Length: 433
Image (cartoon, rainbow, N blue to C red; front, side, top):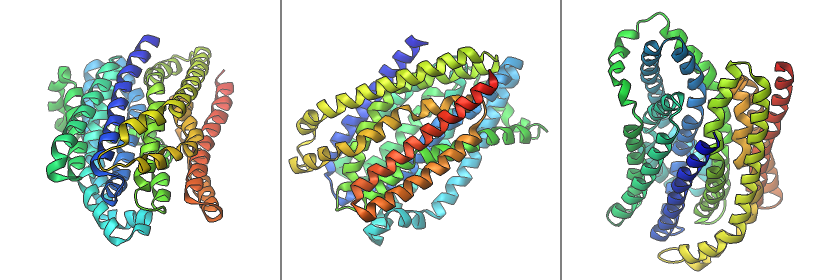
């Protein structure tokens, strides 16, 4: 388990390193200008939904798939492709609905920047939205690999996707400008789906349409959505940090959406790679321990995961605070990103330190609740977290400024969820033991 977690951490570390390099290159290519502000605003909703699908669908689907595999391998493969087709179709319909109401939604978040900014953002966002059904398939294919304890290929796919993303931006940006980032976003997701497709069981795709009339299909779909819906709501709420960050930074002068996004990516990305290995390997083991009623060992695994996650997060934040400014001055200064831009960016570090602790450990605290099937309780906690975060941020904004409001909102959002998850786990563990 430790070896697998370490390897996945290394691979995801490379992914994050490429993404950070990409952020540096993008900043130097486009500068902290209104055009890049528009792209960062446009990618907010697609990125949030892609992240939500990637982080929740596998958690909801994997326990069901594992049960089917224990019963019968052949029927499990048929079930797998049937659910992939149906869920992908449903998400496509939802995507169309979001597209229809995209302008009012963007106006709510970024209307302070004016109608021209909102329309430009909407134009960029439309194309990226339609990657969501493909992300559903990628996530389900990852789930199949995880069910076979093949943990590495999904991370490798993410690595190649990041490389392709950066390559397209570098090659196409001189000719098509900011649109190159939209093309890169779409191409990276399509590449990942090709890499993780379960080719060994591809013959079962032929059973999809013939099995749709199966009397159990609707029950299976409902069962999956009952498990998935609370996770989706919780994850949207947890990833509300990006919406909150960009919405409040939009109340600052031109370029601050870019600054806030860069700092959030730096802290969130680095603490994320240090804990992703623990999360990826921990959850399948946790599910197995719950299904075998080995709750004492589950308790030990949870305690270890939380401790390791917290220590790794704190260590990473210390490294960022003391080392990152030097490299940012060295690497970011140049092109359309001036030394003054870099100093503004570094001055924002203190506002993100405490939120970053929450980002590093929040998912580890949530996973035990998911494994024991208490997602609905977690959802209620996270709804409360969003309400408290937005009210806190608004109150602080009216009393102080947008940056302080942003920081307070992120802290309340992250730690309300963590504290609530810990209370639920302690209560449920006592009952199980």
